[in-house]
Amino acid sequence: MTALLEVQGISLSFGGLKAVSDFSIALRAGDLQGLIGPNGAGKTTVFNLLTGVYRADRGSIRLGGLDLGGAKPSRIAAAGLARTFQNIRLFGDLSVLDNVRVACHLRAATSMAGAILRTSAHRGEEAALRAYATELLEIFGLGDRTGEQARNLPYGDQRRLEIARALATSPKVLLLDEPAAGMNPQEKAALSALIRFVRDRFGVAILLIEHDMGLVMKVCEGITVLDHGVTIARGTPEQVQNDPVVIEAYLGAPAQEGGGVPAERRS
Image (tube, rainbow, N blue to C red):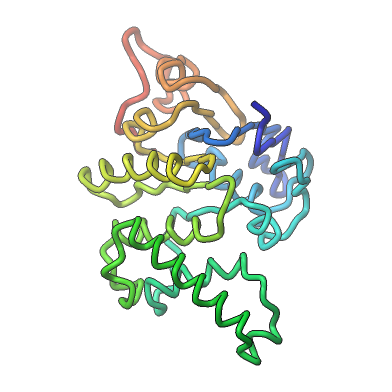
């Protein structure tokens, strides 16, 4: 199957510090892959490169054959690449519904003039976007909280709202940056099921950054491992978990017989 997201040899330096070196990855439609590594490995920097926050020194990023090199984040989002953040970035003062409606407007077709004049086309589109946002919130179990301020939601619900908002842009690829951060075991179990559901229900490819190895090994079908900006391993969860180079990167010592990456390792 042809790759949907193709990343070839991207690199980025900050002064003399090589943050990411020759990183490549390919995601096909429906893939669910993980990107892991100790703190400072360059994982979030990769996400920032993919979404246009940073511009790569070299290499290429293509989504559905479209070259995204040097594109602004808004253009990349419009092309079909959406993300969540390690530190939740909801619009806290807006309602739950309006957080999702804002994202829906990325696909709006009516003009500024139509919005100002409140044309019938504009009103119809607004109604359709509101209905879609409401449907998404129902799917994510937030249908009874549409009028609440986003900041007042429990932590796990805020995470779900952030994923729903990202999906409101109708992405082809969804990047999840440590979605389990700060969650308790029950919330993590629910998140595992939610990630698979999102992939299956919306048909998106998912790339997941996560420190909770139990969650990664449970939901991801393929894993790429970074250490100091360099890809040190790639394979199935079982292959990666038992790779001596990966174990050494996490534990700081050569692997011992019978070892493996700790299931709950947080670096």
